[in-house]
Image (tube, rainbow, N blue to C red; front, side, top):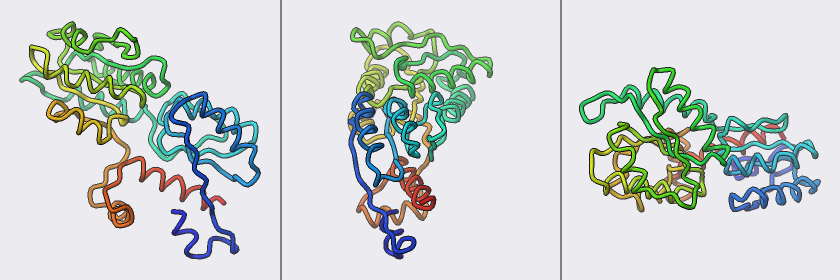
Length: 265
């Protein structure tokens, strides 16, 4: 997006320069970086942050400076500010779609009435996705049998899967970015622990190469709700030529965020 804007001369002979900062998806670091960016008079807008927790933590600094923030990846419904915008649907949309898909699916020759949710209640992203999914699934007359905290240091995937066998037909996996490895343990336990396997659905945090490489065969039937898919779209073709490989939804929504910002400038 930067190249496209600058190659035609920008606007009024002024070009766009991108500065890249990395907060490591750490909320405290995000606030520190936001403070530095907000104090730099050359910065006219921010694309970010990645995780919902980091964005939420950084926003007060941008509000003080009246600096616009466009996130391409933060989906939590709890994020709200006069300076905050995004180019990705909120968790309310993803949660509803996953609830509808789960309730209308047939698994092991029966329709799904009962689910268990695995999530991190301390994460704005994870919590908002859990709330949206549970609300819509119950509106469809389904039952959320358990909402299980995966952030506990004592969390044991095999034990939890054993405990819900026979009580639910499906599991919803809503880890935040820093706990996707725990979700991998749950996905593998679904295959390894004796008993009928669960239908598995999940949020966009699991749409990564790690899910395929680390989940392997166990992740084969995992169904995810994502904002964008690359199949045959013009942007996907152009991006593949530029980056010499396929891109995912985060790249596409980041491109959209950059276009929105440079057009505003």
